[in-house]
Amino acid sequence: MEINDVNTATTDSALLRVLIFGYSEFSQLMSSVLSSFADEATFKIVDAIVGSSVEIQGHIEAFEPDVVVSAGSNARYLRSALPIPVVSLNTTEWDVYNALEKASQVAQNVHFISFEKAYCVAHAAQEKLGVSITESVYLTAEQAREQFYLASKKDDIAIVGASLVCGLAHNKNIPSFLVYSVESCRETIKAAIQQAKEWKKREKDHALLSWLLLQSQTPIIMVDENGDSLTLNKAAREHLSLSAKAELDLDSLIHPIGGKRETDGECEINGNEWWYHLDTINHGQGFKPMYVYQLYRKKPKQQATATQEKKDKHELVFVSKEIEGVIKQVKAYATSPSNVLLFGESGTGKELVARQIHKHSPYSEGKFIALNCSAIPSELFEGELFGHQDGAYTGSKRGGRKGLIEEAHSGALFLDEISELALDQQAKLLRFLQERSYRPLGGNQEKDVDLKLIAASNRSLADMVANGEFREDLFYRLNVFNIFIPPLRARVDDIEHIASFKLTQLVERYRLAYTEADVFSHIAKYLTAHHWPGNIRELENVLERIVAYLHTVDDIKRLEPALRQITPELFSAPTQSQFYRGEGQLKTQEEALILAALEQCQGDKHKAAQKLGISHTTLWRRLKTIKQQ
Image (cartoon, rainbow, N blue to C red; front, side, top):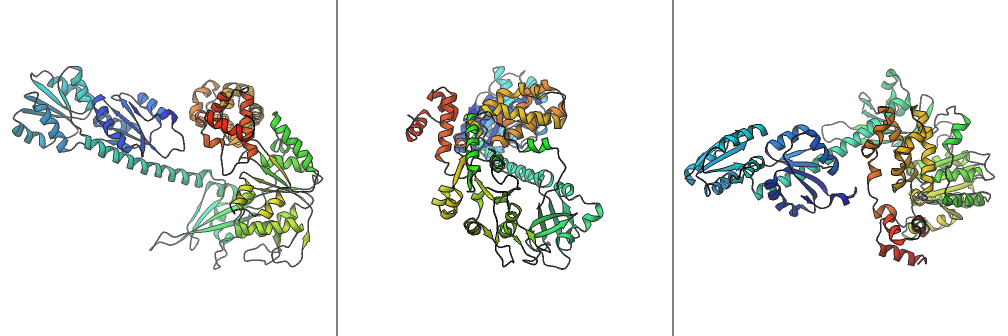
């Protein structure tokens, strides 16, 4: 039996998943207590005595549990076969006595077949209940079957034991009594939920640690007070290009010996300039503090790349009318010196559109300088944007440094995620937009600049203004021209086109023996059916995982059966929240989603509502609001 519908469970559900294995009587007893835990977990009960790892794996893949509950030899086998927690139902002496008492009322001979250990209460119950009680202990399911076979030869017999034993007795029409109680089931579920919570926490902690040490592209260094103990993550070893000897001196490169450790600052390592952020870890009394540096490259290494590779990297790939409309706006707004504001969900390609504006503008001969506003600490923002004079602050580079505004002079400055700027940062940016001049940190002279400013956000700045999170005067300065970039789900025609383009690059990079067309033919139907909440960035990630898998197994016939494991998001049903992500989506985005769905469904509102993941009534209200009913 199954409690709750697992097919409708969403990935953002807070409920734990508990998978229960047991025979029918055990299942019935266990199901009687599950409703008490409905607000903490969703349950699935499998009426089975586990016989093979293949059978287990099928249930694990279908339900994806956080913990497994069973009893007796079933639990023992599951614990040896599964990496996730397995909680065994605990039998008490009181449970045993109650079961023996029930058995004594129907037979003079009671055979108690117990798992793993004998119970003292069995001997005492024989005298009190006035019946013959035989107890035998088993460790494996095969031993339990042998003991039951011997017991079944007796006359006037009743069986007491776990679900496996009771199931055998039921098949032989021999009276049987389960050794478990409702209370022991309830306590087992409590223990299972607690273990599941602890397991998930450990799993998240391990994933975070693994990411920080092995997958993060941010160089991270941890040292002790004296610089004697040094730990580097994989990115630090790769990006800093240090020899074994240089690693020993790394702390002194960032933090001068005997000097104060600055929370934020700049340093130079192997000829590359970095800015860093320092966090101090205090373990508590008796432990020395540890210092963790995160390094961010100020000027990425210039690598010689072919002209075609540069073009491909920033090429805007599309066939849809929606993006064709965006390009028309780009060409119209690019010729003006006024600011342009881009709006679109994360991963829709806002930077690529910004580069198109730069390309079609009078500033195309100048540099395109991009700045992610959410990636720079508030303390470093002003210096990064406006630059600084020599000695402007502790740890600053000798001789001063150009800011990004000066770098972008006669070109374009792209401020991505501008919604993440703090209010004090917004005030500094506003003054520059008003005056088109700036003053470097530590300087006393204004510098004029001429550039094309492009800003982007995945949040509604108008709503942020209404909530007091964004300056109204800055919003109007930025919002001279605005362009909405529709999400990938609203321009389905582009999915195949972008996928083919990216696959061609990936197949070449991984040197696959298969062509882009070979790979695409196996995945096309899954790509076009997916909702793509992560937009083009998610599509790129999915394609690279697929190509990496083929690079490993080198057998394209195995690709489609393995897709559910490689790309589980392609098999997850979209939720309504994925269609309206973030606070205060612009009305134009809502219109684009709904009208695109109606067009794809040829005006069928019922099908459009299903495609959008909303009810027909909700769609009707939306259409009425935008006057399309």
